[in-house]
Image (cartoon, rainbow, N blue to C red; front, side, top):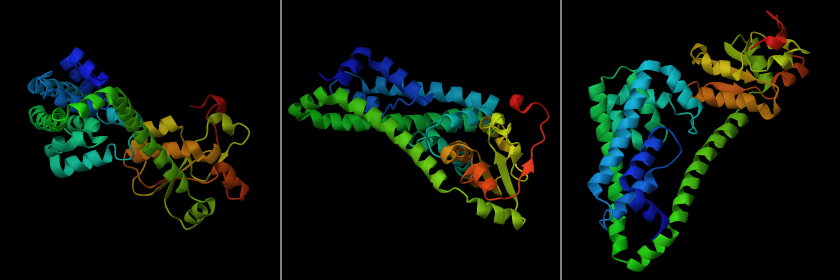
Length: 320
């Protein structure tokens, strides 16, 4: 008997409920392998399909109802926090709002099949003022569709394996390794997507000469200086019209950042790492026209372009 089978038989429906609940609450623990295995076990009568389905559905509803009321109470503050820790690319809130705008509650029917949308959809439903009874109806249908699809898929393949006991025995012995490999691949793919976005943002850096041309032509540009106050002690200058914010302040004041013009970020760190990461956080909340400045402040200054003196309201070391 393989490890996943033994664990499922031992802890049964409690394991299904707990694992699905943790995934729906946002932990990177994919429930798909567990539900597939449970579906396969329902063929051998080691598990009852109906109870496995009820356990998964109950876990989904507990998590989603919690997210719904949290979204209703805390709104965009909660969504910003979710996106900040999300490993998904820049689809976190913007596409969820767009989907609700086009489809309304029907979005909940397929949300659990879409990475990122699964976690964000319930709080967005609460934030947008959807009635709880309507939310509960569509969310229950969506959770039933997701859970039932995975369990039925496992039951189908489980039936095929029962017809070939040798194959079933072999899969049972390597089941633990396959489950672990699946989890690692899942986490690895999400981290890879995050790093891919970072690389994309770094390659989309704006040259200082291009920014200079934009300013000279009178183009409206929103410039953010991400440097730490300590970096300004010996060189208290910045780009013309730049707003000085820390990366955390950018996230907290994201509602003030315009969507209809280019947003330029600059720092002094190697490869504009801070600017690229901050740009990624802005992408997640729907601010697409954002680019790090290649070379940051040092490159701009070395080219002899105009700079402005910073007037400190207090000791620059104490600025936050």
